[in-house]
Length: 172
Image (cartoon, rainbow, N blue to C red):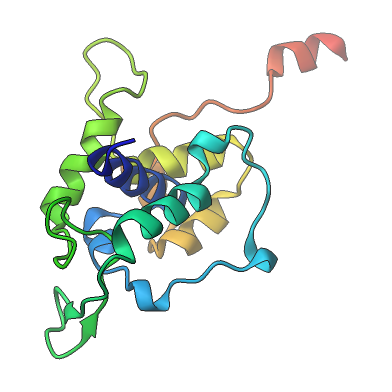
């Protein structure tokens, strides 16, 4: 896989599983990142879409090639070692605009009804988590949203449930 595609894949996976905006991804400090067996849930069915494997591959090919400290995008007196880097300039952190382009590069392949806009990765991740059984209350806390209403009005893409209520009712 090319570094360009690997960067897009990592940005997209982190946006989906972490419910992160491009500006959040821009601020990830590699010096603060670690992988612990205690914190890993082995629920990934396909290793090709495993965020941990993608992170490890990206770090070995890109992020660890040069350790460079750059000013924080918002708090310039603070510095960080950016996780996501430009493809041809590994000594420079990716901007949130470029990260957004990488995420959209992958999101255009996500199935959706004809004419529907490309969803935001953060919204898709939260919606898929809710459909998988994660409580909306936990999503609100993870996202640092002000209320359940914020998720329901602005981020929830679909209200499909896991339950087949027709079958449940007819079986009773």
